[in-house]
Image 1: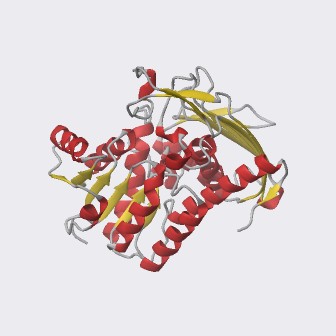
Image 2: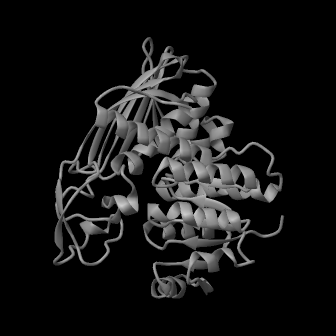
Length: 383
């Protein structure tokens, strides 16, 4: 296959992060689509991108584009991904894949029928030491998985004056903290263990029931830097917090907590897996350390060093030991996996990256978590 070119829809925090990763790989971004032409032109001028599209139809009609990156608010994911797949373009879509499981199911079926590569951006899998944990669990170094637990807590929506489009169900979906950050936690733990969730019991709450919606849009995470003046008080209809009990295949049990209103927690994503032989634990804010827990000998702390890691994990470690890797590198490594697969030209081969099927599974899981909280009972997860 010849040189692959990309176009990016959405120019907020995520869109710019995708563009930076693509440029590090040497993939040409030939065009961008913003909220309007003014936003698109501003990004084009600032980043030196040649083309600005007026709408998604113009983007997917561009013969120079082989891969479409969708980094828009959630409600646009499904229609844009459908348009791209319908035009014969490969797709890398931000999560959640859609705002409900009906949309994500349609997308998954369309992607399977098309044979095109359709990826959901669960980039956090691509920390090198998370790949190391995956390799160790799959090779049964920790024995049978018994327990999984952890949390994903942030404070960027802590104040009643904090605002983002994710707070509006029409734009973000009926699940917020669960879908936005809980989906990352669930994807990570099910990928590392290889075990699917079979039942959930959830408690959800909205800790800030009323917020001030500003007159102008606030970019994700930017509200802590600038305070919008004016605005109207609105009722919040999505959750700030969730605590979920899990049952997994093989009899394993687990729990996790998510929050977007925990003061001091900026991006505190940690998980722990307890096996019948040993344990593993990792914290995103200390991403170059993997804790190894033992009963009959001292615990260990593995510092990221490709020479000491499993071969499968070594592939996603871009720098030698002692050279830290972080959040932007996860986008680079996921895109390397996807574009490397595309360049090989055999689309029938196994896809070792998160696909639309994974994205659909997470949305169905989020739906069941909401149902459990609403009905105050255990909900069995149908496959």
